[in-house]
Amino acid sequence: MLSDDRIKELREYVSSLEHPEEALVDLMHEAQSAYGYLSDEAAEAVADIAGVPVIKVEELATFYNLIFRRPVGRKVIFVCDSISCWVMGMENMFDYLKKKLGIDIGQTTADGAFTLLPICCLGACHVAPAMMVGEKLYGNLTPERIDEILEKERI
Amino acid sequence: MFQPLLTKNFHLGRPASLKEYEASGGYAGLRAALKMAPDEVIKAVIDSGLRGRGGAGFPTGKKWSLTDRKSPGPRYFLVNADEMEPGTFKDRFLMVRDPHQVIEGLLISGYATDAGKGYIFIRYEYCEAARALNVAIEEAKGAGFIGKDILGSGFSMEISVHRSAGRYECGEETALMNALEGRRANPRSKPPYPASKGFWMRPTTINNAETVANIPHIIKMGGNTWKSLAAYDGGAGTKLYGISGRVKNPGLFELPTGTPLKEIIETHGGGMQEGYSFKACLPGGASTPLITPNNLDVPMDFDAVSKVGSRMGTGCVTVFDDTCCIVRAMINNLLFFTRESCGWCTPCRDGLPFVHDILRRIEAGVAEMDELSVLEENCETIYPNSFCAFAPGAVDPVRSMLRLFRPEVEEHIKLKRCPINGTPSPPTPSPGGRGGL
Ligand SMILES: Cc1cc2nc3c(=O)[nH]c(=O)nc-3n(C[C@H](O)[C@H](O)[C@H](O)COP(=O)(O)O)c2cc1C
Ligand code: SF4
Ligand code: FES
Image 1 (cartoon, chains in turn yellow, purple):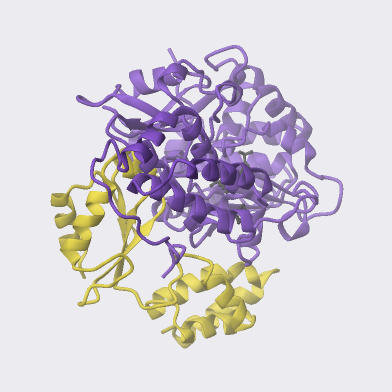
Image 2 (image 1 turned 30 degrees about the vertical axis):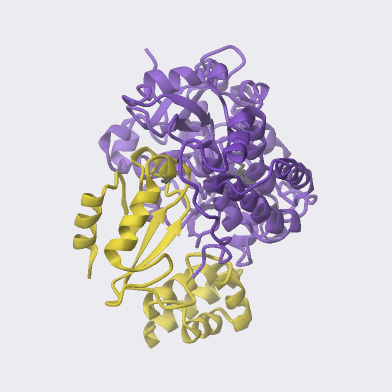
């Protein structure tokens, strides 16, 4: 939930802009982290603050892969499935993660800790295979390292 | 001895602070540029021979001279830091190691093109880089490098960082402008060109993050001196080259532009790891055609790599070793492109999944020989008929595979299995969801 104070601040910020639409993506990110994902309620809040129809928010939300219109876990695990990571054995890491977490790509663990998603090249190809957990980037993945990372990142 | 320019503060292993950046000669380029006329700055960049580092290699000085500086403002300068080309990791390093360099470059670029507002458009996944840039912007504001009447020159510029929300197509320059305007990142038709009607239909100049990071050095050294740093006569300056795959020493290296590909792989990359041999490489990202061992002597520069049937692209090399099935590599590549297609035009949106499916049939050993001509025909049709450069980049590596690895592709069909990975795996359904959730 966005607090009333924060909504007020955001409204002021948006009205200070020459083009309020420039703030839409920022607002979606903020609403997403406040609500856990971009729920209908969150999308409506964004539209309301930006002064645009909800359909405009929906149009963007369904375009961007980092805006989630469905619930996700407390952290999203983004596994790079692009070419350099593929060369370095990404497919095995994906299989290991699926087995370890007991979920398939696109699913969330029963305890709500992690959602598993593919992502394109994370710009860490020199330490492939790579993944991002929440906002943290990890490279040189091995099954042992994945165990450690999950342990550390689980909240 | 070769002196690194772009990477001189990389040894810190964290973002260089304003103090550290200035101690290494930082913001001297801005001070010098503000004492020059904008046309003189543009002249220096033309003299330098700098070509855009975003992949296409358009001459930067020429681009700046095309910007409409006559019609009333506001004018904009955009830094493209969307870096999502698979295999590429150069702009991220520039931003997490020396963010002030990108900011100084943007300020000089804005001065030369008379832009009062600058944006750094960065992909959301680059959290650390966005943080480093924002810290650096605050520091630079405090020191009077950003804001009104910068260093008493009369030139004013504001800078902000825009964090995107995914999708490779955001990196295409007109799609990026749409994205910044809060629209879907579909590309625009040209004309009108951004130089006269770009962001919010105002005159706009856009360059890659590495391109702008070079600008302070060009101003400090003079265009001609910078140009002479290249490895050969036709080249210009230094370039960030990356190398990944099963080499001994994968990483990012700043080298004279036009350093031979072989030297990048063998000397800097350390050569192949024990037990692996070199099969082919993508010289500059997922959209660049394959290069095979017979062309490794090629100087890594735009024209030279084009002459051997590929493109330098981003200059970040992905090496395939002998355990990589080339069909499977292309399946992986096409998965990226089918997922990232912005959906605006039919050849790309519908054609790429079709190409992807044929490749998977080949890999799974269920394709017939005549499907190769269907594959070829589709690539040749998609290539010239799509709305932007995305789809040509998607099919170009596949076309190069058909040119360079025909026997390996045909062997899959004859054996009805992958000759490298052995057992056939049944094709799975197309990735319908475009990577969203
Ligand atoms: C699909 C697509 C994606 C692109 N992605 C990027 C990118 O992430 N970063 C970038 O600098 N240029 C990218 N480009 C190239 C830009 O359109 C543009 O040419 C470039 O930013 C211009 O800067 P430069 O002249 O400094 O290279 C992309 C182009 C296409 C067609
Ligand atoms: S080629 Fe067409 S569908 Fe593909 S990214 Fe460009 S505009 Fe979008
Ligand atoms: S290909 Fe995985 S980080 Fe670049």
